[in-house]
Length: 193
Image 1 (cartoon, rainbow, N blue to C red):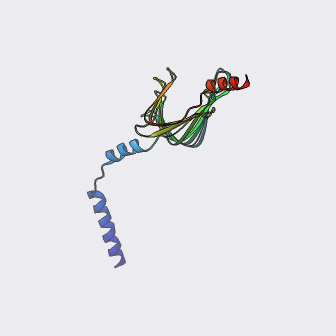
Image 2 (image 1 turned 90 degrees about the vertical axis):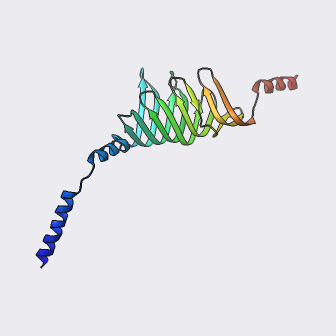
Image 3 (image 1 turned 120 degrees about the vertical axis):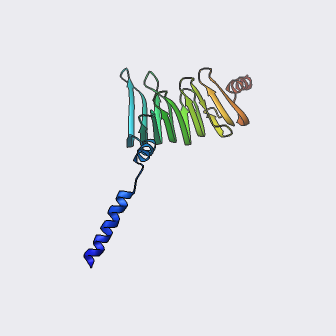
């Protein structure tokens, strides 16, 4: 009897296997879109040019899609160095999506960037860097905060910075405190006289 039951279930499995048709092409296309070709945990990457460190990246996770020429970093920290090898800028973000062909970058999550050369930092939830145009911008309607070492703090929404022109703009909701160091120096000189 046991042999008949086992034979029955074996027959059912064979019939089911023969009669089922899976769309394997669909599964392969889906897997290509979702699964990265390269995954790295605790990534550390250093770029050296002319014998000097120019850029360092640490990330808790890295996923790369070669065909899309795209890399996503999680919990990313970076340091940029000038030609003399001095620290020029540093930052962190929960995520950074890098378009490998253009070097455009989308930062998201808790973003903090600081420039030692500009003596200023940026705080945002989303920033997008266009490498060719040397432009940094936030999402429409989202707040970006800029803080300078002199005490200036400016916040606003729909942020855009053009690094070529060394200019920045907000479309709306601007507030903050501006410290004019030249006016402070002039006032100090007048007080001393």
